[in-house]
Image (cartoon, rainbow, N blue to C red; front, side, top):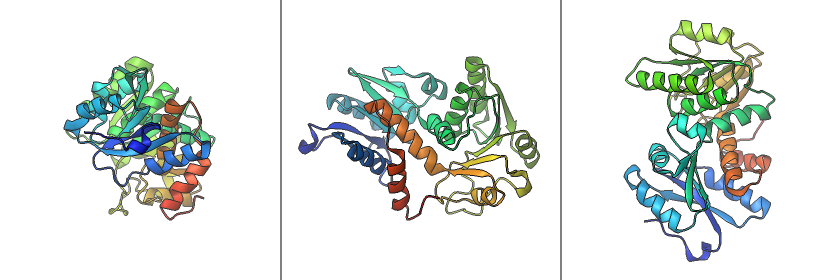
Length: 296
């Protein structure tokens, strides 16, 4: 049962449902933005397990929530329970953002939007580009969908042939049918990675390889593949600088970590709820300070 502190009842409510969520940076991001813009909003954390999502939806609707984010394991259930769904959420089959529109819960997925907007801030547009994405899981799915919607010329998706392969193929087939983008799902090997990177403008690691506590992991064995004209994104942010990130940085690539995608997906949710632009620089400073790292 989700309850709201009486002192917050006149404040517009936003928040995050999922489990576990105590380490989320979303409250810091959104509450920093609300304060900076003088908005009478608050962002709260609500621990909601997958089998509790339906009840949480009912509670949040009764509270008149402006909207909320969804994280694992609640994204698929939130998508299924929404009254309406956006184009990208429908293709992905999962929602990370819910907006209350006159009592109807509308589902969006801003993960991919966060990815492409982080790149745009750095002067890179996916439109007309050839892209290589390592992985085909939830985060990768959102990235693939949004890059296709935003006009990528070709998307190479490299994945291991495991029990999720058929699901990845179905996703790719659906995106091709919807967007007519040239998307190739290929088994991930050292050879296929090399072949795809050589013809790409952008490389994205959307796998957990390199994440703490296994910081020595890296899917790129030959650092020479990381050309100076290649943009490299590693969506991991623990550590902020993975082995791949460091290799790309040394080679002179333009490189981004997962915090940038996190901030920009939050900014997209923020705009959906408030109609205003999140003060990105101020939010970024607070997030990096909380991680005891300086943004470079």
